[in-house]
Image 1: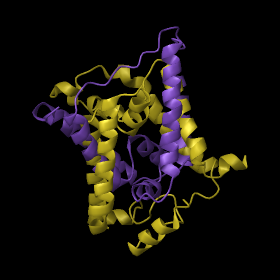
Image 2 (image 1 turned 60 degrees about the horizontal axis):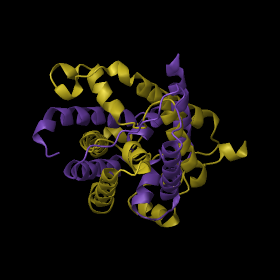
Image 3 (image 1 turned 90 degrees about the horizontal axis):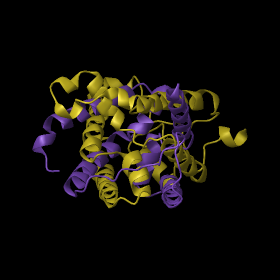
Image 4 (image 1 turned 135 degrees about the vertical axis):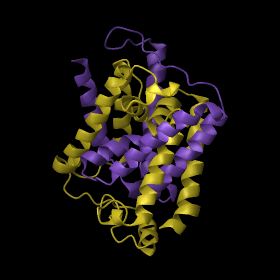
Length: 185
Length: 137
């Protein structure tokens, strides 16, 4: 039980993701979470004016179920399977974040400075969350997949184009993390 | 009834995202700082096992639960859409610190500001669909 309640090391987390990939393949589906964002557009009626969203979303119902499960899993894990949710990040990262006035670093699961109701009253924080989300949604569909669809599913199936996408993910992430974010925070 | 299976797979996925801390903004920040092996270990070990698994599925023509051949479609050939789309996705991943899977997990974990990220991710997807015919693919 203690093993479950403590944070899971990478050599548990990684194989668990591989197991999820296998289960989806075994039940005749492919792993890809960002497709759900497209399905949500279609459910909201985007298919009436845009061809890209004009498809039978019921065929994607299984993936929406995976999303609902992911929500429930987050609730179960945080409520019942965790004693201390603080994330033990590397001391160098910790001091770097403290310099950027992230007082919750090392003491919480998510930074209070970005992901709390109080923080959301700041225009800067709202900009980070909304623009970040917008780029994730736009980029995932443009690239035809996100971390699960390309870095896990696509690379596992030795798709060269998924490697291009993953290299893109890291170029974008590194530029944001090292060049843009220090000015925003 | 078949849908219940996917709900359970999702629950397993959500628990894994939360417990492995892949859903934590701090872990994503740390990953892009190259300070810890943690995230690389998660993605790398999932990938090595995934490659082995798919090779075995193909070699031994393993059937799905419904007795059908397991088919994994090839991704469309292109370079520009994957590079441009990938970079845009990466900028967002580095900014919001969450990719689409963990976003759902964080709602369940009670991190409600993530709803702003999700709503805008849906808007971003919608905007892509709108302007897709004008973009290089």
